[in-house]
Amino acid sequence: MPYQYVREPLTADESDRLSHACETTTERLVVWTLLDTGLRVGELCGITPRSILWQQRQLRVKGKGGPHGKRAKVRVVPMSPRVRTLLEHHFALEKAFPVKTRRAQDIVRAVANRAGITRDVSPHVLRHTFATTALQKGISLPTVQKILGHDRLQTTAIYLNFTNVHIQDEFERKW
Image 1: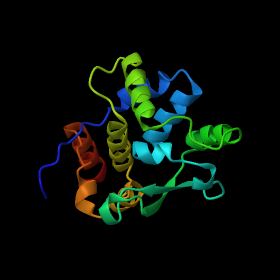
Image 2 (image 1 turned 45 degrees about the horizontal axis):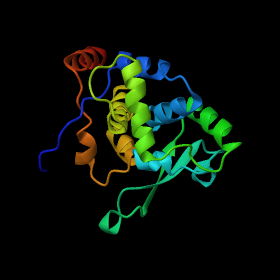
Image 3 (image 1 turned 60 degrees about the vertical axis):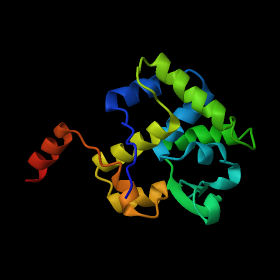
C-alpha cells in the first residue's frame, strides 16, 4: 500500500470541547453528525429525508466508489440518538441539508477555533476521530470498515493509531 498521510484524530477532550463549542443548530447538525457517523463531508451535505431510515435509526448514503469515483456505492450508517434528534427537527421543516460542502468545512474550522483547538480540524479529521473512537469503544475493525464504506480492511486499518495509554489500558484489562 502506498504511503498515506495519517491525520491525527481529536482527543476525547478536544472532541468534547468541539461538541460544546457549537452555538447554532446548524453547527450542531454538521459537527455532531460528522463526529457520530464518520460520514465524508459530501455525504453529509447530500442527506435528504429519503436518506433517513427512521425506524432502523440509520442513514442511507451514496458514497465514494463505483466506476471513476462516481457516487454509485450505497451504504447504511447507524445514527446516534443525538444525531437522530437533530435530523428529525431539521427535516420536519426542510427538504435538504442546510449547507453545502464548503460551508460545512468552514463551520468545522470556526467551531474548532472557538473551542480553542490549535491544530487544523477538518471534516475528515472528524471522520478519523469517529473511526478511532469506535475502535477504542470496542467496535470491530470489519464493522468500522462497513460504516466508513471502505472496500479494503487495510484502508480502515489506517485509523488504528492508538496511543501508548490505550495499548497499556487494553493489555491490562484483557491480560
